Structures are given as structure tokens and as C-alpha cells.
Length: 50
Image 1: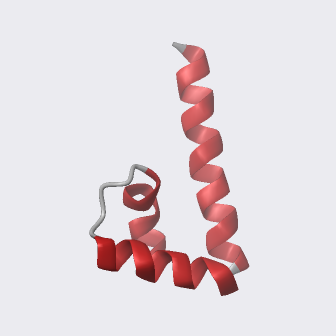
Image 2: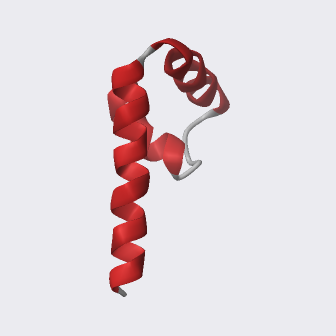
């Protein structure tokens, strides 16, 4: 579930409860931290291509 919320979390459009849940999960889950880093890198690359 958290993995599905990561793009919304990154865009800061999820609910406060969801944001809290994602942040608590990220403290312990290395896989989701890597996924969030990947989302950030993809967006930076997209912006640089414009």
C-alpha cells in the first residue's frame, strides 16, 4: 500500500494520515526509501529534459 502512495506523498497530495503512515514506514523500509529516491530521480530527469 505504501508503495502506491509514494508518488502522492512525493507530490504532497496525500492526506495527512497517509503522509504520516508513509513517513513511519520509510523509517524502517529500505525498499520504499529506494523507490522514493527513484521517483525523485525520474522527476528530476523529466524536468531537465524540458
